[in-house]
Image (tube, rainbow, N blue to C red; front, side, top):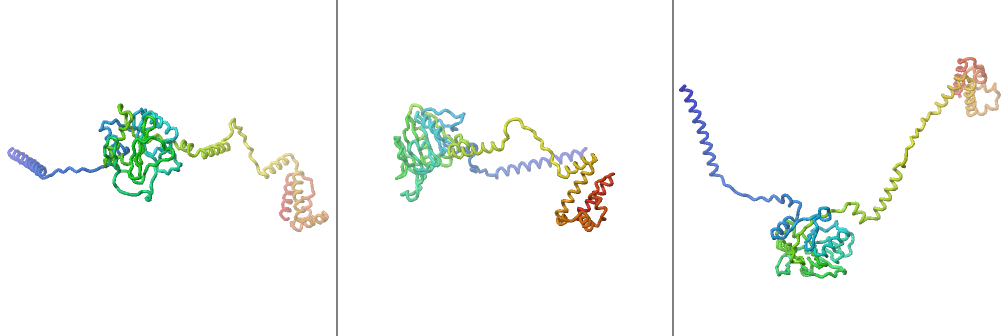
Length: 392
């Protein structure tokens, strides 16, 4: 018993020493380790990956401005009220004449529309911008020769509240006017001879046109005074007693390809429809019950000839059968040896005997003897006539 107890005590001491060693090593590592916090940019996450104006929305919300994204021209679209602001950063490709008229009616009732435009020339009508066309404005790109000075500095803006803002605009994109422009200008953003922003009155509402809207995206809104400029635009309603909602449109309900083709290529669509109707008229079978007409199986001429011979043979008409063979042989002789036609019957038999190597009585019996007593007589005559035919 004493030996067993000593072994148990020794094992317990070893386990204890191992535990103490692990605790000591753990404490030593803990005292030697130093903690460092490293920040790593993982890029945009969540909705920010698909929403370029999410930071702008959060900024306006933090400033007390009600803001929300909106999808235009859908069944779930929120109704736009007077004194609301609609921010559309795209070039509005989906805005046809009807949709543009709906937005303009809302603006004239008291709404505020903030838009930009597709870069074009004054006479470019390849893709019509119905809103800008109706007010006589467009966006154009200036060449290097048209720009007097070129620099990287932002444009200085003095707001109606005497606030001083700096906004970065593309020097080459400017707002131009056509002869149809007659609207009242509330304010404009100009840099030397370049116009980058313009706000005009339309009925009870306003339209703000900017040469570009890159400065309001997530990666640019923190630069210069871009955020403050957006907040300034969100509060420029005519009716100051009631603050509306700032809506921004990421995308509109696009027209289908057929709708776009019907609007922009109507003559092509009419031609294609006419061609399609013609093709269907030719290819599609006529309406009504179908008559299943089974065409008879056609037989070869030899089959008909065999059937006719079998019929005459069953009827015992041997003479007719052998006469048909004699006629064919006579016709072949006239074709091969036309000079025999002036010879006598006996001379013709002699010539046939010479070329066929048959005896004269056998040939004469096959050609002229019409008496057939039994089947063997018929077969012998047919064999002789066939040999004569081959010898020709």
